Image (cartoon, rainbow, N blue to C red; front, side):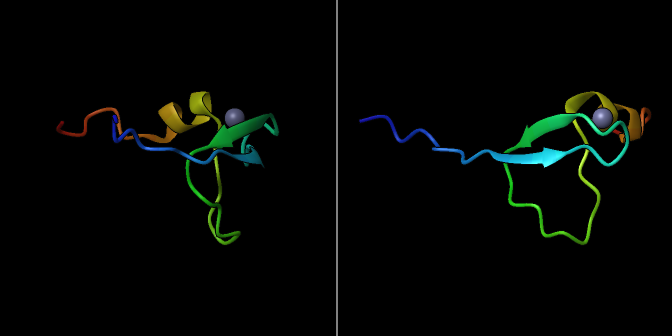
Length: 49
Ligand SMILES: [Zn+2]
């Protein structure tokens, strides 16, 4: 059996663009959640990998 992670997706509304999206973590309600596009925008472009 493959021990693949069964990621639970949670429906959220993006804090930036208001688009409905899904995130693989449980939103705690205190931090903004972003859709993939906005998440990429908020990521520091010059972060080291
Ligand atoms: Zn967004």
